[in-house]
Length: 225
Image (tube, rainbow, N blue to C red):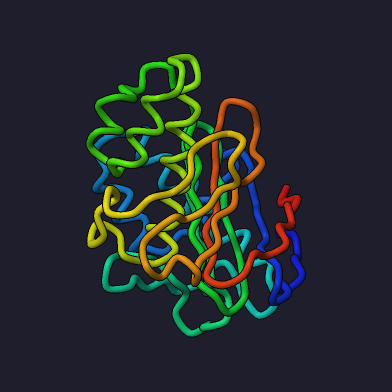
């Protein structure tokens, strides 16, 4: 287990590493039971690897041990640590990659997506994007739409996860930027000044975004393995 310094108030720590590296022996009995309920072996393996990585990484922060971590969920399903109110985290995994954001004393959300050629971009955009986002996306040349779709998708998911609303807030009820030359920004709703959106540097073939409450943090990419 690698020790990590406690994140400063103006920092967010980003851990990005292969999902297969998860140490599943750290899982609790409840997590093992939850994994066993997943009939799809790929989803089951991803869940176990992701939880193992989460425990292993968080266990590297002072005062936290992997096998002593206790997780709880908020009203809309956002996970958090029980008994440690200062350390906040959010995780995502897609394809072969796992990503985790760790901050101190503020809400955070992160999303990573593997860029897939078979994604039905128009159908998904009409379902999940706001009218403004759809108009901007479909105005782009066809060869630019797929990457713009993923930029928009990850930014929206990061915000939804950060504010902890989950499915209680419709993804088409607010706007984010999606153009490559435009910084990641939450355009609406009314509380947009309370949140910061940022793109996250990840390996080729993936797209990721971060949302934090308050002003823009310094991103520190942490070597976790």
